[in-house]
Image (cartoon, rainbow, N blue to C red):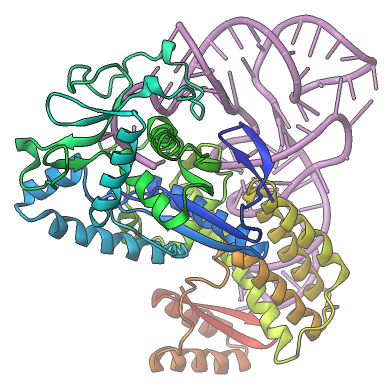
Length: 466
RNA sequence: GGUGCGAUGGCCGAGUGGUUAGGCAGAGGUCUGCAAAACCUCGAACAGCGGUUCAAUUCCGCUUCGCACCUCCA
């Protein structure tokens, strides 16, 4: 497979250091609130990446950090009047629950920043040894960007052209030069009781340092792949590179991948625009995890994605179409063992693999999926599909679904129908046998009113809960 | 000011120097008592202006508009 590497700004074959085993680090949530769908776009992208690597027969070791100490978590804990861990724990659990709703595969390791303070202190020590860190008057420790010649290689930023952004006041910290960033932040009153001892005084780790220390601990000083949202490219990822390469003198990461932002109704998501949604907001509005997942992975990860309710509607209809096809194939296959695949299935099957391996081109992968749906339906319509072929097609759908993660996932449970529904269906069968069409239609309306859809086919009535 | 990205049919969203992306929505048809589903067919797009070329939606330049980052936003 080949992927777009932000470092080289080109597509390159993804070759892991250890053949057949991709080690990746993905920037995880800051657990001060429920994650929103913009966050989940990034996690869904990383999930697809992971699944495509697995699809290619490689092993994956994925590390996703939990940032459980920073300005926002500290502020939240102080406002709630509880210890930091007590404040963050529910959001960590909510995050894992949300991942399940979206069928995002769990990472191998979820290290929390507060559990890795010793590793962080050791890393700062190494930076001092290399002459890359200095202590300021207020007790904070800064990384000296000027000492690292290739600082800016990821963001392609020229230090001479850096200028103050609007995000942070310039006089906030006591730094030697603009561009230096804190690896250790000295305690102040706004931190409450959140502080750790260090050789440089009480304080807490800088955000960038957390990721460097934890990535190195679990994946080694040099590993394959690091991902995140495009907004993390600078300064976060640039600074991770600076810290790690500064300390080790070795390359940190071979491949960097970044996903574009999500917009909602064509606008940046924001609370004031009323288009700010957490996953649970959408679930409360009646959208399922698989419908939301469909929308999130339906675009290419490097293009901005416009999230709309029309798109969710389209996802619902599209998924129903896939479900109908899979159900029909399942019925056709019966208990027959998979036989030879119909020849027309080869093109979409191969096209699918080529698409996902070309920098995760999911839109094309979906086109392949729908080609299979269309051709399968067509073959069944013409009654030329054998049960063995249907069974073989189902194995193909399942193979594709190892990447999509939504064909077999999250479908409304079939289950039995309540006795009163059963009775209505039975009554309707009798009405139909008597060609009592108005009676049949009346019962169909009644079933619809109770949330059950009935369809007539050659095999009889098909009843489905809506 | 710097560094990048983008503009595709009613909506979402790929891709390509010449040949149907795909999904949703829409139109017509087949099937059906009707409906639904399914199948078949169809219409509809490449922001604007130049340039290169036999040929440009695709390559180049400019313009307009939009987005992202420029020190702790996925």
